[in-house]
Length: 302
Image: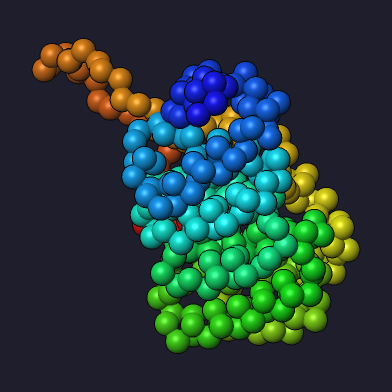
């Protein structure tokens, strides 16, 4: 183990406040030395995700974001492999980042081979959040010119046809995160106007949640120049990963810190009723994560 990595690893292993920006900057300045070590961390975690169960463990998340920023193709397959973990493990490994950053990290490290992403999207035993990230990665990689647009549109259209049939055959499948909702937004971003008739059929059949996807807005979006769609994604912070600071700014709020020992409170010392800091989120309210979905179909699904 290099002397530099021996110094950096303890600073990046667990969530700390303030965030270790100096250590991240040092890693960034020595990416050729550090990148293979971070890839090895991802490979080890894909083989055994146990370390991610520790409170505040974030080394793999820093690894994912740094390698995505560096466009490191050797990180692509280990990152995809992590998505094949079962749903509870994916939640433990990525937490909120499976929605916020995982798909964009996959696109940022993509080596042009769509097969790993297609396999993850098609893995019915994988987390639906990870599968959605694979669909997002394919679309973003095509928009960024990292892979040809045509095969991506073809895959998404075929996937949508299969998912629509599955929803018709098993309606309760839509109670979880519906992949068809996300998929049509990707077809729109890619300007796949040739698939509008099919998308209209999905709307008419009630297979798309119109609280998440507005039919009129999608009609406008799908007719945009894909370059405009990419610009909009970048403006919204949904492009490739370039700057770690916005990616990690909210970590202290959404990741568990290691437990802190507190002095016991004597019985009877607390007389005031406990008051919730914010309003309770109803099942039909927008999810607080900002996805735009109803809570019951987002973080309230489980």
